[in-house]
Amino acid sequence: MPLIGTFIVPHPPLIIPEVGKGQEQKISKTIAAYQEIARRIAKLRPDTIIVTTPHATMYADYLHISPGTHAAGNFQDFGATTVQLEVDYDMDFIQKLISIANEEKLAVGTLGAKTKTLDHGTMVPLYFINQTYQAYQLVRISLAGLSPLFHYQFGKCIAKVAEQSEKKIIIVASGDLSHKLKADGPYGLAEEGEIFDQQLTSAMKQGDFLRFLSFDGDFCEAAAECGLRSFIIMAGALDGKAIHAELLSYEGTFGVGYAVAAYKIIGIDESRHFDQLFIAAEAERIAGIKLAEDEYVSLARQSLEYYVKTHEVIRQPAKLPDDLSKGRAGVFVSLKINGRLRGCIGTILPTKANIAAEIIRNAISAGTEDPRFEPVRADELNQLVYSVDVLGKASLVASIEELDVKRYGLIVTAKEKRGLLLPNLTGVDTPQQQVDIALQKAGISKNEVYSMERFEVVRHK
Image 1 (tube, rainbow, N blue to C red):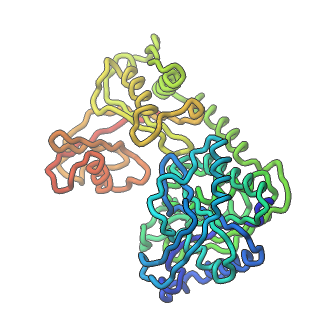
Image 2: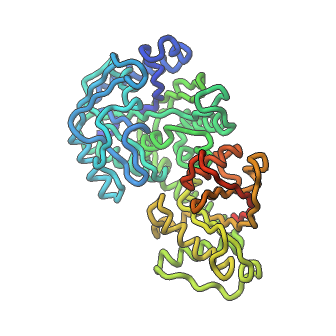
Image 3: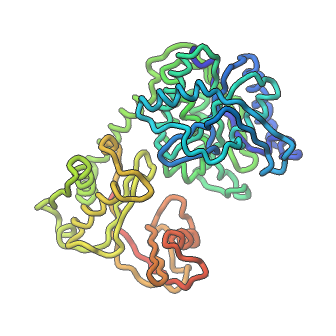
């Protein structure tokens, strides 16, 4: 049968009285909304509760579903060992879900479990649910470092399994919003935090799941969001359905956004296939970007597309501006999909005869050799946004005061170890952050003797 209910909830451990020790009263609206959700779930009497959580086993290229028949956990890490939870997993649903997801060529399964212990992203919702209802089995689903569209399409698989089942099934999408709402909060303040929460809660209230899919990756990272992909799985499970959307509460008392929302299926709505709408909108956006690309970016795109399709290196075009055909410089090529990094490779110093050859080589490397990512697939080419950074000459600096994260990139060197960080990167707001990240990339300890060089870039986007 179709899903009988879907919910969005936060998971702050301090909302549990044994953890909060009175602090939980500062988010009383969230508690009241949580209790209302628990009452609604008790009335629905689901056979299976699906919890999507950002804090279970997580992989970059694979979505993990918790295996086994049983799991337990407690709040020991938060000073409350007496609060314990135990669950039985719905193995039949899990097996069918993996089968359908794999048929859709989605990388989903139960392999690689790091721990069977329940995470707090699961336990906080169950703590409230168990106060009113306990006659259910659980499916615990983590997130992956894959695209929002992947998570949406996986949500559609959940709906398909539910519709083929005689069980009553609900989804509880566990996740917090921005973690950077207050300067005195645990994660500090970022201007993107409040904007993100305003936009996301507005989308929650309106049931605008296209907005869920459309957030820029760099913007989400700057806002330090937690649960968006969890919510997107839930949205995918509601694909093509008319819904009644309700935002029960929102609070950001402790510098982290907590939202509680409920969605009830009330019919069919063919205008709400948001994956199709998103793909069409992205195609239009990328087409506009391609029209505006200069010779540097266009060459990077042509180079990677030609290589992915033919496995051969493109021949350097005969007619290029002198800067490309005669100039020499280090070049970095960056690839993004929906604002999220998909690859970045570059050279600090020129290694080829000219900048054009440097771009061709590094564009291919960014798409196929970045160790952080799988090689770019042919079906991803039309989603990629490119940028090309041409490095200026580096000069030594004597102190951190000479750095400017917006204007200058940084090179740190200790003997044979060297690390580089480009300027004007999302999440790098201070020279100290820039130095720390560059040292980490190079594998240089802060206690080692190292030199610093700064450089400017010409960024082509």
